[in-house]
Length: 132
Image (tube, rainbow, N blue to C red; front, side):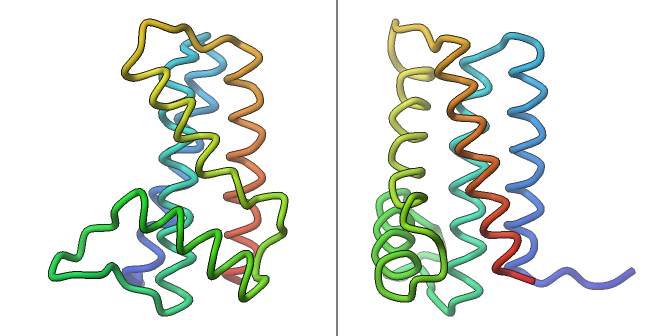
């Protein structure tokens, strides 16, 4: 068995979350779909940041959501131009929907979940393509 790099583990987890999002959407579980869409994007962004040589700040090796969003948009999209500008707000938009799904009385609609799933698929695909 080939040893998986620490960066590749995050891409594998992102793809697993994306598959989970698609499965939840197909089962009309739109709140879970929104949650999995966000984590697919978040984990893909961690993968992309690790491949770019970025590490979490501070003494912890934990990736904070704010740090990942800022570094992904600021470094990988704006400064280094590794990903298209239309992906810039994907993390923030899917985070807002995840928070709605997980922490509010509001419902996530089929349309909202479908759009989040499309965004997550595009984001993970772009990260996967850049990583090859």
